[in-house]
Image 1: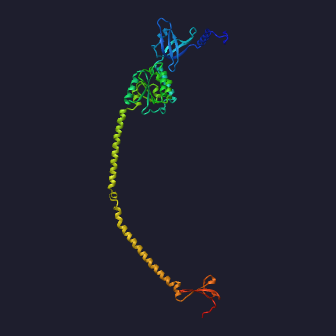
Image 2 (image 1 turned 30 degrees about the vertical axis):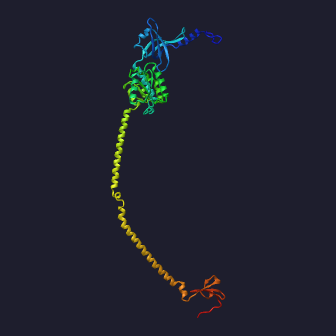
Length: 409
């Protein structure tokens, strides 16, 4: 039994290493997949050392094996080879290091790689990362163009030369990164984040020349694909040639057949644009001249019409009728005035003949009882004795008092 561990009774290093080795040895035999990044095989030694790296993360594992295991491999083992290894984890208590002691190495075939890529494609498609509605449009003239490609590669040279020939003022931010091998994905991810965070970069191109399926594996890596889908800057995939079709082509906002095609898509051709502007100016000028000519013909046609050629003709043709109607109106009005004047004189004569003044002139008088409110008396009963009366004759009126009544025979 091991003594209890405490500050007063610490374990020695040998005890700690033995306990760690015991726990690691319990793991047993395991199968591991990875990518070879370093292989050290010295002549005359009984152990070969391999560094196996995870292609999707910055993690590695030390592998040891007898040299004959490497010799039995179905394919030559070199840096970048994807393999599956069967071994047992071992902890070396003397150095305090852990390694995987393998007894079998299998290379991953093209069929298996394609099957894995297909499964990943179906997964990402089900998640909607290939949805065309998520694709961001490219700017017509970007302020800055980010380019991720291999150092001094043909793809980088093609993109830069084509962009500068089409639009010399374009700003290109070139980021060099490995485009194959175990270090490609982490480096590309880092450069992609830097370009996506740069406010002066409006579009990002990931470019690489053609290659085998194994060479293009980094561009079907799930971690890289999800990073591209999460970018806020439009991304153009320009991987390989037309037949090459890594999964990055489906996730990127635009797929270019070649790096040269990507350069043509990202900036317009200044010569073609100037020629287009000149053509449109000529067409616009021609259209304007044709429109002016057409409108001039319309105006000339309107001016040639009688109503515009002699605007007063219609008025002049009716001037005689108007004068005749005016003369008729004046004659009718004069006739009406004359008729009404005669009628007025006739009525005035009748009124003078039948009026009270003419009656008074013939010797009649009008008697009014002043005590009865100046009421006109019609008989003697209206004029009692002593009543004050007013007698109106033709040339005036007198006031009298009734002193008696006489009966007429």
